[in-house]
Image (cartoon, rainbow, N blue to C red; front, side, top):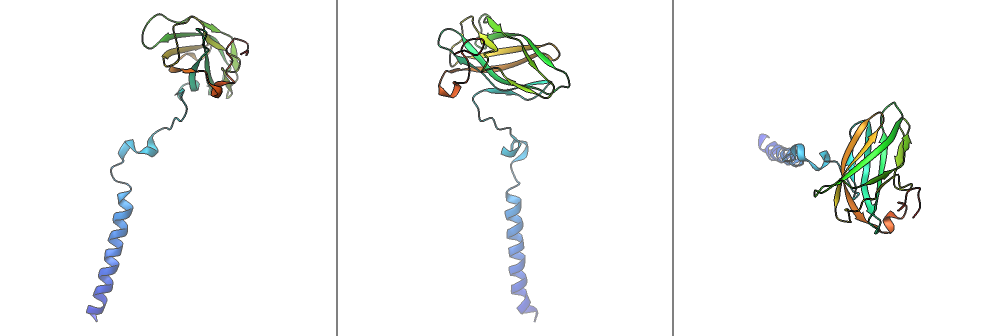
Length: 170
């Protein structure tokens, strides 16, 4: 009788071992760099996901006339209203800061604001073109300075809702 059970027992043990090996194989070798541990950023722009004021898909759209319009979604995660007071920009490749024209923007607690359609921040001093990166600093009355490195992109249909002139005009 023991000989009849032995093949069944061996098959069951082999099946169990195979199942365990299969299950464990998906867990090995991933560590802290597992794809599921990485933030996915599909857009061209840069994201800043920390602090009282966060920036999403930050980029500057080259207007083709020596200016570039900053387009980013500003998210106020604080309990206080945030007012955009000023902005500065410097090419990451070096050089002098770029002149920036800034319109005030007020973002309520828990609210967001897209700077692109109103052309709230426009780089006017020249010196940046599509393919460049700029270090952009937005200054808020409560949160202070928020800095991000943002790409300068070519104006295409994708950016048709980003105004090329202050006040939301194209």
